[in-house]
Image (tube, rainbow, N blue to C red):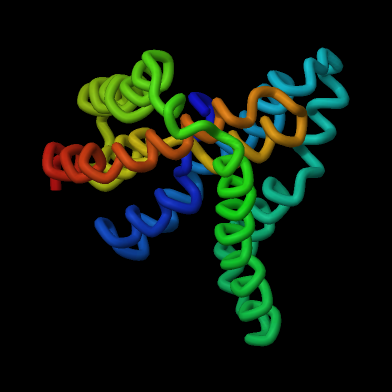
Length: 203
């Protein structure tokens, strides 16, 4: 949840809404190293794999990474895919969010409402929504980068825990209830914090 935020499902629309098409392109590039971390070090946390070659193979051949590379190639080549293909890919992409929310909902059903909130969840949410983007803000402030890159970097760093956190925790049987609490509370509290970061950022 700390390594991989919801910079994809939630971050991309926000980046596009605030900075337009250029913001969406920059957000997509921002996601590439995060995806690499997710499917290498992030996956190793759950699976306890120590084989570097196996981890590297998983990263290089993972559909998310291949899709990012293909997307960059198509963008640079200014190629246009058939409308039937693009609409199919878009429809499948829209299903991802709904399916991940269904998984979270099924895990949520097993959690006792009285045990929803605890100090660890509060500390995690503080780190995910305030401290991490604060560090990114300070780093970007002293770098010679454009205001758009500055803003995109901070906004995406301020995203809550991604739904993948719950999905992987469920798959590897590593406290999925706790992971779901992280996702839910950080997502709820990100509504005001993202607005605040948007007001602070240079435009």
